[in-house]
Image 1 (cartoon, rainbow, N blue to C red):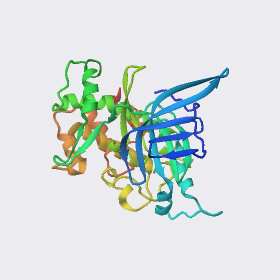
Image 2: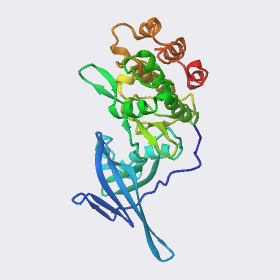
Image 3: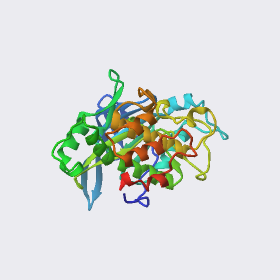
Image 4: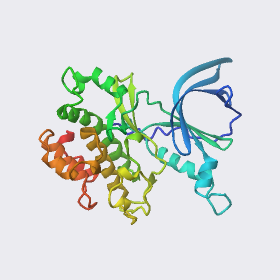
Length: 335
């Protein structure tokens, strides 16, 4: 994917002129953001689909244009309570913590990473105006089967392009062979994103299906998969820097990351990406397999030898023998 780093997002801080939840509109200087639907919710944030009405003067005439975006609303006061941040000359403020994610977005611009266009701060909230991933989630957790399943929306879009993606007319979602072809289509894009951030000494630290969205790019007529939410991401001083504390999701945490000792966060990202790939093929998390997951991979007669090699390299318990992005770039499966 093309590196568009020089196109830095319009990240600014300014006060909201009006914040009104009664009429579901936020007037931002000469722009109006209209909330449409809630897309998701976390401990300290909510994400909405919004219409952003832009107004500007052109040769004495007022022009306007409405575009669809996603808006993440962070409760910076609640973040402050969590991190016990009270401000002061020698302490971080709650806003400092929220803006750490934005420092990462300033450094990354990639087709497979969600784009942040604008930041607005006011009334104890931080509003992040982001690219709208119009397909939404790729996989969702099904409690009854204890497996990740493809969402109806992503299945519909992939089936419409099956001749292009799979070189066949239909997708059999129960077939491991077909799932491997779908997995390759999705994984290549996610790997591009992770490889890109690692080249810039940035780690995500919470790669999971809940942090991966899909978008149909109508201009390019293609499905794009987007890595989102860098709230626990980190800019490293060097590729050798160890991270002292695990802050991701336990089910995706590598043994070294959840050990309580300083760990290689780049190698931990690779493990989490391997978990995602494993679930694309079999649905369940590796640790919930009926037998050791490396045996499941090695003994499978339905997946290719190239995929076996890739998965086994990503899911090594020892970070020293676990694949890096450089190793994975040489995989025959990704050609």
